[in-house]
Amino acid sequence: MTKIKRNAALLAASAAVLSLAVPLTTATASTTDAPKPPPLDWTTCQGEGLDPRQECATVEVPMDYAAPHGKKITLAVSRIPAENPEARRGALLMIPGGPGGGSLNDPSGKEQKLPQEVRDAYDLIGFDPRGYGRSTPVTCGLEHGDLALTKLRPWPAPDGSVTENMATAQRMADACARNGGELMRHISTANEARDLDRIRAALGERKISAWGVSYGTYVGAVYNQLFPHRTDRIVLDSNDDPDHTRVARGWLAAYETGAEDNFPEFAKWASAPGNPDRLAEKAAEVRPLFLRLAARLDREPIPWPGANPEELNGNVLRQTMLDSLYDPDRYPALARLILSARKGTVPPAPQGPPEAVLQNVVAVGAATMCNDVTWPESPAVYQKGVAESRAKYPLTAGMPRNAMVCAAWPYQPQEPAIRITDRGPSTVLLVQNERDVATPLSGALKLRAALGRRAVMVTVDSTGHDAYLANGNACGDRTVSHFLTTGERPARDLYCDSGSGGAQDAG
Image (cartoon, rainbow, N blue to C red; front, side, top):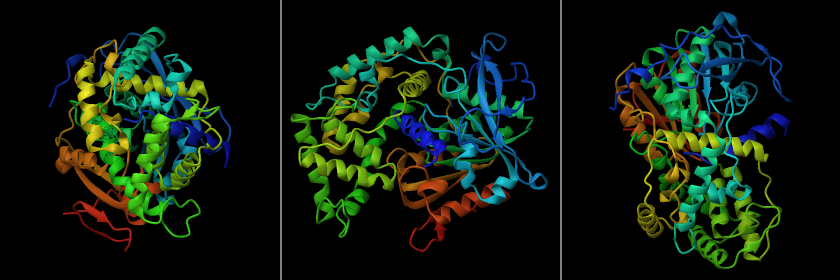
């Protein structure tokens, strides 16, 4: 594996840690009051393993769009120019997932999987969102223990208590307020969408196309809502529920159904004859085996030197389960952890991203989720939700309805979250795996309904997070590539069957 691929994998894993009609005021409705950015000054990108064609630049944007002539921050932007200038249509913006992820190196990475006709037609554009990576960065300076996945995702105590989660939320929020600086208040989905329009303007494009993945689908939908006549061809891949009253709180809750949708696929794999990591003879035996082991580890954790936390407990096992359901290629790691734990042993401690990177990812993710919408502050709200969730969805043990850092966030949202509507041009193609642990089909259907006539949706008979050119299938990939190349979408929603490789009407 090349260094760029290893780094991309680490950053994708760290971004997955947080993954996750109301009019605007006149002062924040658009970017038109901000000075027009100058043309970009492209230079050689820093970093190893990059395509030599990739160029980098910076765009200056207002830190606060309500004060467009005030303090500025910078956004790091990259591109690989269209490979056939005669066929060039424009720019294809890669909107990363997260919140707390970037796409700056994607033109050298995953974008090279795009078909030749797409790479011929578009400049491939990556960027680091405000607060992240090579853009003006933020950090919360969290304690090492609070960077554990089982802290960042709010797993309750073995008995279901949320007391420790509330204390963790307060400690993390205090650190973000103390160390994050003024920019922490201005990191939000709406401001990222406004930043995208500044990037579009700096590129000199009248309209821009985009491929948004995971959280990037919500960013893309918000951009399309705020700037509908500046969008060309928009692909939203692995789609978030756009409920503007809950936003990331709803995305967290979606893990309940996401785990239930996906665990049966792991169970079938883990019980297949000939599998060297086989856990049981029948698929129906895998779920109770997992639940029994998690409960045992709640009572009797196994020391795990070098891990964070330094023990394999029930919640670490549950979090590993969620991580593994993102991609069937991760099933063996989960099965081997289960096999080791049943013997009272552990594998080597997993390697995480560098702590400085994780600190940055977590800060951007926390700021985005907490600044988008107000979360409840009452422990009773979370305790009730956790109890209900544990009873109905035992795989996730109440975590999806528990308190994150936002329960103690010191700042109020500066504007209402953007409501996605069906008003605007019909320029959107949604692609969605049928079984997705992080952005389940049930949430994607809500985005499809909100967009109405503006969108067409392709549902793919596949398992895992990220569909197009990743965990989807050939039918879905063909449909998206054809849209990007020609602008032609299916006449109606489609279902891409994995068996025949063909498409049929979804209705």
